[in-house]
Image: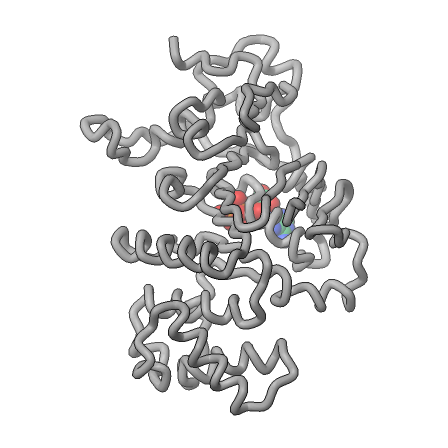
Length: 321
Ligand SMILES: Nc1ncnc2c1ncn2[C@@H]1O[C@H](COP(=O)(O)OP(=O)(O)OP(=O)(O)O)[C@@H](O)[C@H]1O
């Protein structure tokens, strides 16, 4: 059975300037134990997708259409009280920058134990024992459990945040930019840790990032988002080596790549569009080197390239010459 199914999700923010179509008809799924990378530039709707799954949207954010299923539970129809039973226990999130929001005057171990008490009916002693188990699970030195946040490096704090997310043995963990503030070596260690945990705990994992180049070792599949839509999705190999969407191509060119070490990273000219008034047709057309008239006029549907690989482009693969 699929662990997660997101079907035609539309999440819009209603603000005084208009309606921000942050997630606009997004579909993807995740098998048990699988890791999916959700990638795209800032503002393309990645976090809104994750917050929709967890139903943690601010009041102006409304799920206007589509469904989200966790196994057979339709998360989109649950009341606020019902969804709380699933948060942390079934789906938990490691939030962007959360490691900087730790309580500076509380021992890290106590902060993990507090997360356990918050979500499970256990005594303080049981919570402390669980915190010790979680501490070891995320490969922090047991002797450091009485330390304070300022005594921990960024990578160690991020491990502690992951321990909190695992407090209730979730079926799915969503890491929103879990490595962004960390240096390259520590980034790789945290991604390896998440990958190991996913395999030992048999949980699903979604990694949200703007950096497509970090997902290769960890993810089974990658979904590329642009301006509120998934523009390409497929196995990691297909997205890296046989991608068809010009946006995926430009994202890959934007980061240093061990396969083409002599080439300098090239940023994508321009910036993602305003999602209150997105461009007509293909939303990427104003920034696309291969755009033709049809791209302004018609939104491309998803073209299937086999093996679960599909892309939304009228001229898929045009950059190959
Ligand atoms: N509370 C809000 N009110 C209005 N617009 C919002 C709100 N939250 C997000 N948005 C808008 O929704 C769009 C998608 O934002 P989102 O944070 O989901 O993107 P993202 O890809 O996760 O980017 P980042 O990596 O910067 O978090 C953006 O245009 C953003 O400005």
